[in-house]
Image (cartoon, rainbow, N blue to C red; front, top):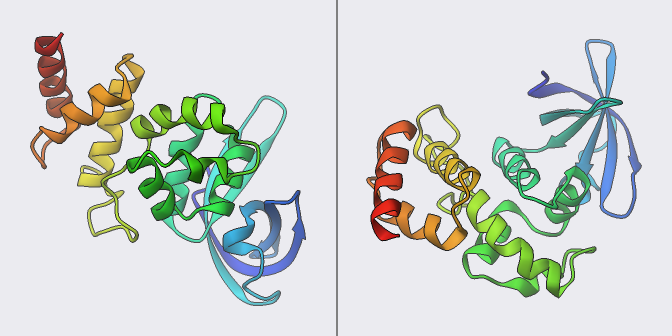
Length: 204
C-alpha cells in the first residue's frame, strides 16, 4: 500500500476537466497519480521535486493512485469516498472545486449551493449528499491539521472514526452530530462509542 511519494515531477496531462494525471519518478520508477486540478493543475513545474500524499485505490481490475499535496486533503478524499454515491472521480472533482476547509465549512453550514457548484451534483443530489457528508467529514478539523489531527488516538482522527462507526450502525447525521457534540474531548474511540450508544439509546 503506497502512502506517499517523494520524487521528481516528469509529466502532467489532463484527465478530464477536473483531474490531472501526474508522472512522478522515484528512484528511476515512474508512478502515474491522479490528482485534483486545483492542487496540481498548474504546479510544480516539470523537473521539480514533489511530495505527493497518496491514496491507493484497489479494484478487481485496476490499481489507481490518487495524489494530494497534504495528508489532510488525502484524509478528506478518503472520507468523501466513504459516503454513498461518491466514488473516487466524484471526490476528486469536489476537491478540484473546494479545498477541504471550504468543503467542511459548506457542510457545517448546510450550504447546498456550494455542493451544487461541483459539476455533476444537482440540487436533489446535494440535498441527499448533505447528511452523508455531515456524518463522514471531520467537521472539527480546521484548515491546517493540528499536531494531533490524523495521529493515532488524536482528536481529529478519533472524532472521524467515531462518526464513521455511528454512521455504519445506521444512525442519522443529526443524531450523530448532537451526540458527538456532548462527548468528552479526549478518550479512546471504543470508550466514546460506548458512551454515544448509551446516550442514543436513552434518547430513543
